[in-house]
View 1 (cartoon, rainbow, N blue to C red):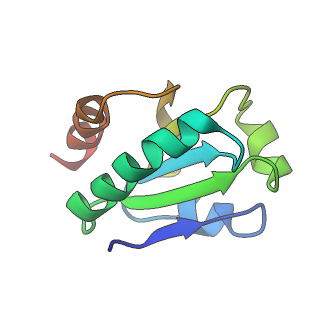
View 2 (view 1 turned 45 degrees about the vertical axis):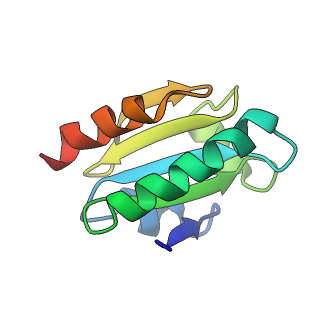
View 3 (view 1 turned 180 degrees about the horizontal axis):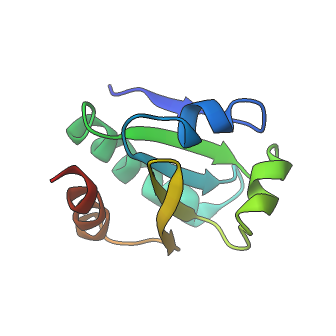
Length: 108
């Protein structure tokens, strides 16, 4: 299984903003049904793009600074960061093909 990193306010900058490869961030919560729906897809993508993209989860109930900084209002929110900047945001459950298209755009 690919490594999905849980981050918080203390390590977001190091793990996401300073990453030398693109980072896909899943803003989620334990109580969120749609978040649980995309979790297996996120895990599959982490396997498929293991060497090219870092996969990170942010629990919105525990991480306040980062959630506020990026104005996360709905979950699941998936944000793609490249070179420390957010380049794409997807809100709600999306088909796996949409995530693949997004990742292929930064790894090609």
